[in-house]
Image (cartoon, rainbow over all chains, first blue to last red; front, side, top):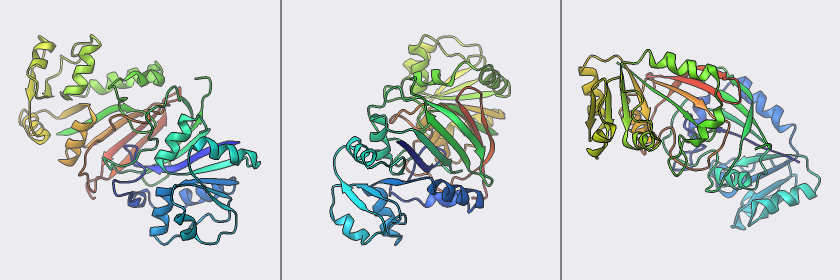
Length: 184
Length: 184
């Protein structure tokens, strides 16, 4: 099983501002390249993991759960979030507790490519458990100064990656793609 | 006057770990490209601004102040740091209070290219005052999960940049270079 943390961050490593707003994403610009890239990525995915904060942000914006065609694991203490999402085309499950147990269940289900959809705390826990295989990050041309980061965790050690992609996305955004280097 | 924040950060935007250690820099690798780039950059600089935390880290490592050939402004409450640095070839001044006042003094002295040497809090204050003209950041292939960020500030608004460089540095590090976009 291969887990990809595909997301966007500010130039100073934040994936949202202190009010959990993702408005900074607008500075990436509506590049066809970016949109096409995300659709192509989604087509390779067969399961999604999302945290409570990210899901709440989507629900507040009236998006519902936009990836309800993909089997989804929500990591959240609040059972009410599942009813807020409503009916979905693919199974939508809520789990509490360790991110490691969530990935074990997903692997046991035979899923092969998992999108870690957010946010930084879930990504941090996943990295602590060494379950992140790939990071695909669009770097926005704006600084936030505060807010949750690409990884938020207190005990990450020896988590090295190899750089496999580094390019301008047109506009002023950059794309960095990293693969976990398990020799370290 | 043109102010450049030239530094390195982890892939999750941290410029040091929670113990203020810069050991993650070793994951950038001893690329001749990186070293030559830094020397070429230094040759363009005629003044340096450094914060207390960054200077203390250099002193603890026994480095002294490695850029004592350049007029330097230290932003620190502790006067003892100046005597810890000892004699320098170019003037070494300590100032307290606002970063804005420091930049005014440097500009009044006729300096034209200033290196903001560190750290994240000083850079955050400088960005709040809109005194950052350029950011040159080497992104290391490692995640830290916590620690001071490229910019740490609570009130950064509308600070957009243009991406002018995005390339692999060889090894697994990436170079991003941004110019402040003052239309925003």
